Amino acid sequence: MDGLTIPHFVLVPLPAQGHTIPMVDIAHLLAERGVTVTFVTTPVNAARIRKVIDRAEAAGLPIGFLELRFPCAEAGLPEGCENVDLLPSLELTPAFFRACGLLREPLLDRLREPHQPPASCIVSDMWHLWTQGVADELGVPRLIFHGTGCFPLLCMRNIRSSILFDEVNDDTKPLMVPGLPHRIEITKGQSPFFRQDPESERLWNEMLTADEACHGVVVNSFHEMESLYIEGYQKAIGKKAWAIGPVCLYNKNEDVSVKAVRGNKSSDDGLQCLAWLDSVAPRSVVYASFGSVAYISPSQHVEIGEGLKASNHPFVWVIKPREQSPALEQWLAEGFVESTEGRGFVIRGWAPQVAILSHSAVGGFVTHCGWNSCLEAICAGVPVLTWPFFAEQFLNERLMVSVLGIGVAAGVNTRTMLMGDEIMVKREAVEESVRKLMDGGEEGEERRKRTKELGEKARKAMEVAGSSYQNMTDLIQEVSLHNVKVRSKMGR
Ligand code: UDP
Image (cartoon, rainbow, N blue to C red):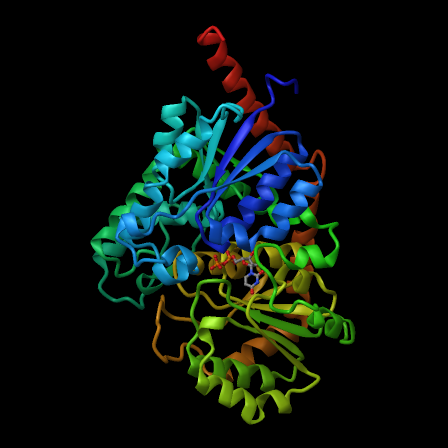
């Protein structure tokens, strides 16, 4: 690529870890291919990925990190909210989206600064609908980055466009997801759209229909896992979907200390957990972690802890800071930590997840089925125990368990965003499903084999000439060609 044709991708992630982390990986993948990248972020999120930013700068990668103040006060959000963990505390509220939309003018101003190379395209998170206006203003294509796969995306579109789910009153009755070439069932209570307020309803509608207005879609997935659904999704939106993942593999050769801080400063700074894993038998450890947003109540934590303990497997268990409570601390201190000493490792805070999953001692992952967690498990060849909470996580669970056959369901019946002290899965069920995941006889062996094979396919997809690598090449070429055409039309 010469100076004129080097494309400039402007990446606009949602200011939340699960959305920012894969975009950081995409930024690196693009930059390693010689593309100029501007990564738009907020100061809070920039602080989280500081080490990554420093490393990109030190390596001379052409990634610029553009920090925009999150306009909380102007959007009617509580003062000082720009300093908190945005998504878990604010959720996807209208005020949150209003604040995001107010980033439009500052972003345009910064992108028009004389030293900035002209933008070639905007790749923005699916929830940043306002970036279509930025792209139009700059005369460049907008590509949507979906933080999830084509199976859940297609299911969501099909559920929305059918009246089946509206017609049924029973929230617990299994219903067939329409329009798939095979049978997949979920209940109304597990649907991403269950009991939504009208405002959220409107936002989901807008988000899903925006696909049809954009230039194309970028998905963190790979053909070997989802080809049927990628094709189905492209057909449904009438646009190209470039599957360029799993992007978490970009740093597969990195030193473990770098891998550990993807996305946040780890609370296990000394990486003691990884040192402990070195001392444990291969594939014997269960890793339990529920992403960055889902909230686990103190009583549910006790059930998880007791279930893990009773399973007799060694475990690494992550408890988020906002889930910590005096009651939980007391329970941990009153015997749990002592009785599991040498066999259990509790991390309070941000765990080095990719590094843990990649460790040969880990043989199973209890996950909330966030898309990144699912892909990270696949890449590490680790089967999952699925414990979805909300959004499209139940659909991800179906993909892991019913379609790919690499997961065991914990048996969560309904969507939950509870902040109370409810229990969704009791200790006996936790114990039983952990045993099934980790032991599971012939069935367990088959599951492990399938996961490993899928992980191999994921790696191949990301290698030079692999399907995702090739799709990234096509994407860069598509944007470059688009720009050449636009420039020649304008006589520049
Ligand atoms: N993550 C991590 N350590 C933690 C919690 C989360 O590294 O203690 C990372 C995890 O590896 C994944 C992302 O945060 O990359 C979470 O994204 P996911 O889509 O799984 O779930 P979300 O947090 O968006 O619900």
